[in-house]
Image (cartoon, rainbow over all chains, first blue to last red; front, side, top):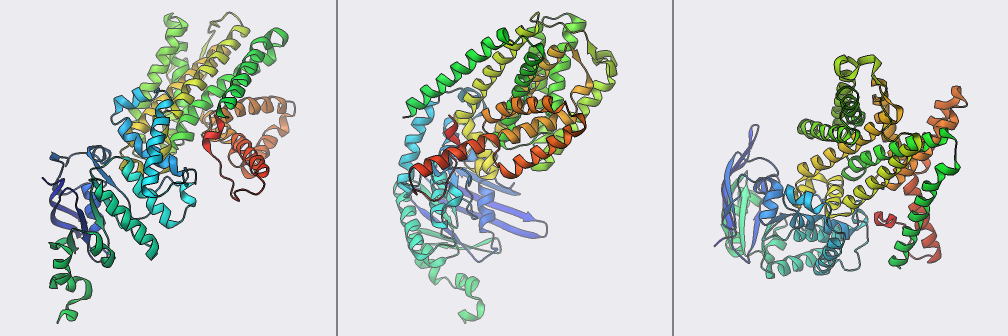
Length: 255
Length: 328
């Protein structure tokens, strides 16, 4: 059974059809890549799936449950974590607090439990703290717990983003250009981490336009151009697909 | 280590409470007792502000409106209907909370300065209502002759400090809870908070309603101290004063703003001896604090602590970071 199924997703911004009838599905233990040139609509697809912007049409089925009408935070609770392209962190807080805040949703999902938990004993946080410490060790930020998030370098901020999204305990993790602006060493670290996340049983969806690094990690790749899905397959199929080469390099190159 | 810190903290609180308890017996001067009482009530109001502004990151200019609702409701109920004091105050608090809940649907469509302006409009509306709704609020004349529910000023003094400590305790407990983490997450980055599974709108609304209820309590305590409710008491400038005290005390620290309420109230009283220069000195003081003591009183205190610690460690870390949990 597929963990995440997206059907007929569409979005129009004024005169621009940003996403046009895109469907894909992600299986368990799969790293699914979405690639495409700049402005192809990759991030918009993410934002539509996670309900950060309203959909024109399309259904999203997450672990057998139709979450099309859910709000963003409800989708997160249903098991979908995500990161943003432009390193979004709680930049004024410590690394530890970043992860703790993200863990909050599992602690108090709905409003009633917010009210109930508001006078929970502070010890509840010390338990959460242990979990957060483990998570930070997992993503490779051990020793950085009390650094102010905004003061760290780009690579570590990227790791922290992953940590934040993992703290929501997702089944499906959506990563929006996790390798953006990183040097080769940092890329290797993050790539390894993504593989490690996959091995814990989380399905990962990655947007990336650095095709070379994505080819190495993805099990399945969808190619998007002008808001349409033009191809899908394993990395080898994608590499040899003439339409994909055209989208990336232009038609003349093929001929 | 942290246990010793807790003991120190506990000791300090006990000393402070004992001092406040015995003070009225030695200090016969009613002026000072009144001043302390007013400051304590102001401190409650500032705590209400800090909950919203300091932790959730939304500035409200309509806080005086909630204070007015919390003040006029019990004033009306006590003087015209004859409800008992505690019940009347509770009604005011609930009404204020309900009002906050209702207007939150409109105001939380706004963020930042627009939210501030939206709430300011609410504050002004309440003020206009108080001024014109003569049947209930007494209009320009207000509601006068409210009974002091504690017989005398000293009783009221104890009541004010009791309430202050209760509010401090409750709000502190709240912001140290997981919900406090959610508040800070909303302040830090609302979009990320939403994507981290936090129901941001509900979280904000929760804080807004609580803040309004605390403001209402403060408003009620003011009018029963003064024994009259007047529309002139709950104007925009009161909202601003609360905001200024909050900033000077240190946003998001609770204790800092509470202390600042006392300090500024006393400063204002002493400046009253030079009426012509009063506002000028006050203004210059505010400017200096904002310019040279970022983070307010509490922030400066924490920075000083961090600086001493760093010096003791002799060139450990170069950067001095302020840990918000230091003030426990």
